Length: 170
Image (tube, rainbow, N blue to C red; front, side):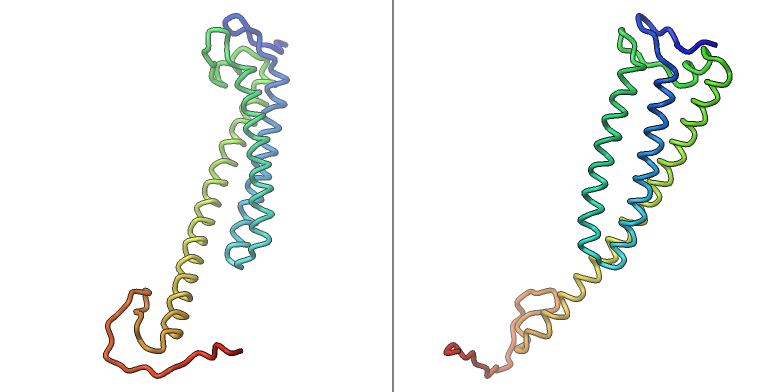
């Protein structure tokens, strides 16, 4: 069994690479879960949950970046070239090679699911923003009893005489 791949001037520890891919897989599963929570929080306009999720997402992305940096350092050769996973796998025993291929396939699948979930979050966020904009416009038009402002908040000329007052004593 060959546990390492010799890459220009450097040996790659396949067991360590497998562990790093496992870590990346776990963190991406966390990211997928957080994206689902974020979608639900946006749909229910839960600002506290969004704040917590944003913080947890940032922490998760930090761990992913660190693990990815470690992975790249492990596989990048002294000459700066990086072998593909398939190039690494062909030099290993079949069991280790299959494990690496499975991890890589799982990561690709997770990344695609995360992208889909984040697209759903974007759509939900846009819908919430449009709803909130509509509410603001409705409130603005109702508060403009003189009809001075249009629904968009722009000043609109009016011929209507408005009689109103403000009690500044209280």
